[in-house]
Image (cartoon, rainbow, N blue to C red; front, top):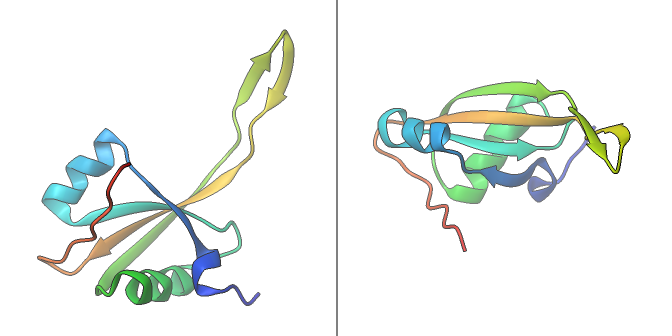
Length: 96
């Protein structure tokens, strides 16, 4: 499947754990398209942010059961990518 450059990376993920890994291990997390593979994710991050990616790990997050007004339902499943950059490089992700 051919995905565009900006179709692969949906949004950056900012959590306490990822922030800790960013400072020490140069790792960043992104919510990505469910059908994107590691090669597409690597090339998209390198072209969008102008950095060198050394490693890409992907995780399929399953949906969780939630209840709204006593009706059970499931949230959508999604895919997360953890990208490791070359030593010393960083991505500027600002929170508005």
